[in-house]
Image 1 (tube, protein in one colour):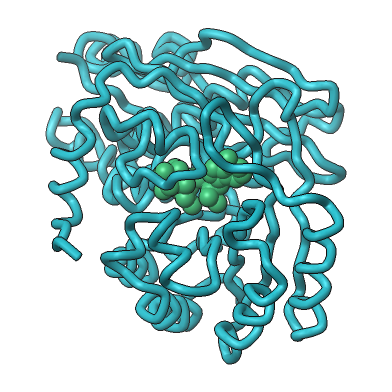
Image 2: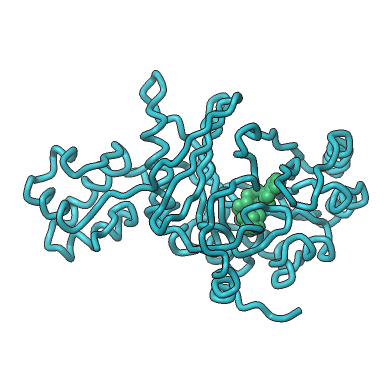
Length: 364
Ligand code: SAH
Ligand code: SF4
């Protein structure tokens, strides 16, 4: 099988070149062709010797996910359904805003964590994406979007908030993020690359060491009772452990705060007493809150909190001293809003098996 060069960080590409008897410095040239210029074929690499191009043609490929459908929302948000090998479909979303463009990237086909309010979680898990499939979403989106009139790329920010739990696909996500950050590739700043996690505590410590980027935690509850009900992972890593990990992360983080995401679920986690509980809970943690209106999906069993209640909840957090924003729902006319990413997961039966592989569940 040919090797997909999009999988390799620069050090790994250098190692690969050495292994095939090529000069190490050639790797950087090829790496730049792939990621700075978005080369889709070896024939485009005009300053690379013909013999090397021929060798690469024989043993390697440049393989990004492929477009299945594109939806463009009235607010400019674009949702792409992309296919990856094995007949699986994932989704990437581009959100243009004044002065920046954010790409929301998937890390897995489905998700094993089964958060109750999330349509990805309800669908089950099929497999991890390779690093090439993860960074390939950025590679592909840059090609699709082209450049602005000044010749700049439109994507300035990346959020690991699409399908999947990024810390459950740790190595591939780290390699993909390293390529995104590399100044010989996409040169995204660490502050503009955000990883969102439901809180795989032990891996937050790894992330702080291996690739500290901006961090968003899907908190969604102010106490363990409610959190465990909607996020099963909380039974393994309860809130106190999560907060302790956040404090450790802040020592290495490129930003001096953590964003806590909080999906507002009517009658579940949206009472004013919950807001008051949060104010106390996060004392001493440098953080901001981002309240997310729930995006309903068929048979979710949850309802969105009314706007008035969201604003009251926000006020309590703000009065408690926390910067608190309410996320604008983007692209909901095309089902591109958070938790609405409905990629097609072919094999739902693998969920339990995979989940056990990376986080042994203790019966609780
Ligand atoms: N697995 C990671 C990243 C992907 S989910 C995580 O959980 O953080 C991205 C964000 O969308 C998370 O904050 C998640 O809780 C939120 N989300 C999931 N389902 C949602 C829904 N139906 N409405 C609004 N937000 C949702
Ligand atoms: Fe997975 Fe995140 Fe959805 Fe939970 S919210 S099921 S961790 S994608």
